[in-house]
Image (cartoon, rainbow, N blue to C red):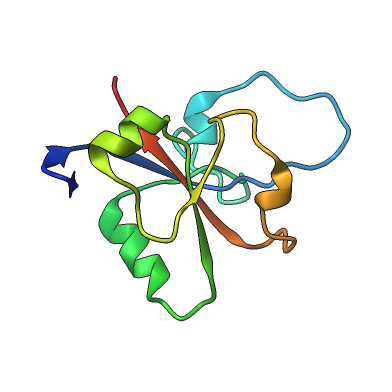
Amino acid sequence: MYYKGGKIAMILIAGLALGGASPAPALDLGKLLGYGDQDPTLETFKLIHVHDLKALMSDGKGAVYIYDANVASTRTQFGVIPGATLLTSDDKYDTAILPQDKHSRLVFYCANWL
């Protein structure tokens, strides 16, 4: 994706609903991202590409809430997806900005410098 003349790799991550008060199992990032045993009952994050986001936004199935988790310098250099809500931090932000409906479609993105 190109913004303001620069190239940026975006990771778009759909939201994950967590629930229950039982102890959390060990984090298996592969399963969390949807790899591994492909268990259809496993609630996972989903990595999507920009063209997937465009399709989500135009599929007629309701709103898609987009959140930008980049730092200010990245936003200045590469821009922001129009309509995205800017987070104050990638891991510490006020959850009041999230929609009340727990079944809402959420997309979080940030630059991937790996």
